[in-house]
Image (cartoon, rainbow, N blue to C red; front, side, top):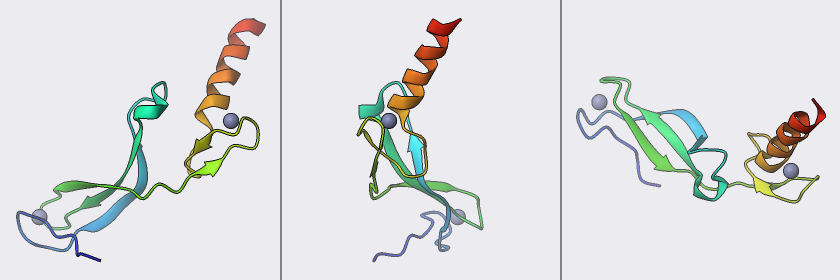
Length: 85
Ligand SMILES: [Zn+2]
Ligand SMILES: [Zn+2]
């Protein structure tokens, strides 16, 4: 595995946030997950594509990150709430 180093000061980057969801929840297909690395020296932040580790929602079968709630169910719950009032 290649070491992740800061392109400016060549310090080893530290993992700040793993599998961070980028993009809008409304455009699920466009959403990408990234690992965010930060340089301890100059605080430069570098993004790397995260390995997708998806789980299947037990309710609707949608694949999503285990770190976040199912976007489809969240959306449906929101729509239901709109209808109820
Ligand atoms: Zn740096
Ligand atoms: Zn779901």
